[in-house]
Each structure stands twice: as structure tokens, then as C-alpha cells.
Length: 173
Image (cartoon, rainbow, N blue to C red):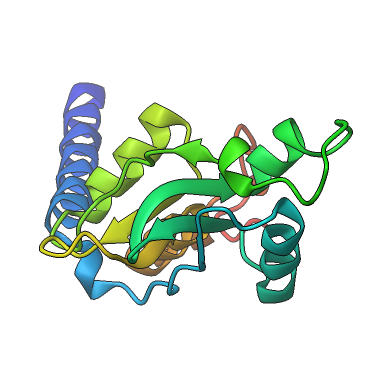
């Protein structure tokens, strides 16, 4: 009896994993409503970049040449390379940006984007047009979380407040 129950639970779990995998492997980035990227030209001052990021309430900004990203400046870059350092705010952002950012095209899957973010410890991935190489969007960690919450609401809503918490009643009350 216990073995049958275990087998049933295991098969249900495998079916859930297969559903999650299929959604992550089939949903294309192009189907998401992503934010347009903030872009500044190479040579823009650090001050201008930070002011624009703050004004636009963005987590990153792309440094572009003819619309193509040649670098990315993230909140993490500002914290690690600019804040509490003896930096002249009139210096070019090129010195502090992360050069040659990894990018994806809209035909790639959400799973590929999330996998890249996890493996590379990224919080922002520029999305570029496959033909022109121009930046069209930014896929960020909030987009990943929103996608997962919208795709699997029953799993997210039913999560306990603390990961290892066991609820005493099915309702959690």
C-alpha cells in the first residue's frame, strides 16, 4: 500500500516536472512583454548614466554603438566599481561597464534565459535583434519571477512563507 502511494506521488511529481520543463523549453522570449532597453553612447559620463538610471528607475543601462550593445552598466557595477571609490563622475562609463555583454535573441526560450542568468550570475540579459544586432529589450530577474508566477500560480500561491515550513492544516490557518 505504501509503495503504491509512493509510486503514485512520484509519477505525479515527474508529470509536474515535465510540464514545467515543457513550458520553459517552449515559451519564447518574443512572447514576453519586456522593457525597452536604456541605451547611452560610448563616452557618456558616469554621472549622466547614474542620473538616467535613477530617473528611469532601471536596473541597468546598455552602452551602445549604432544601437548595438558594447557594454552594460548594472546596479552591481555601480556598487562595486563606483560607490565609495575615488571616481571622477565625469569619467566615461566605458571604464566601469561590463564590456561585451552576453545577449540572447527573441527566438530563444525563457528557460535558456533563466539558465544563463543562473549559470553566469546575471540579473539582466540584453535581448537583441537577430539580424541587426540592435538591442530591443532587457530580460531581468523580475521578468523571470513574473513569468514563473504567471505560469505556475498554484505552486507559487501554495508555497509556505518559509521554505522548510510545514503547514499544520491544508489551508495554512
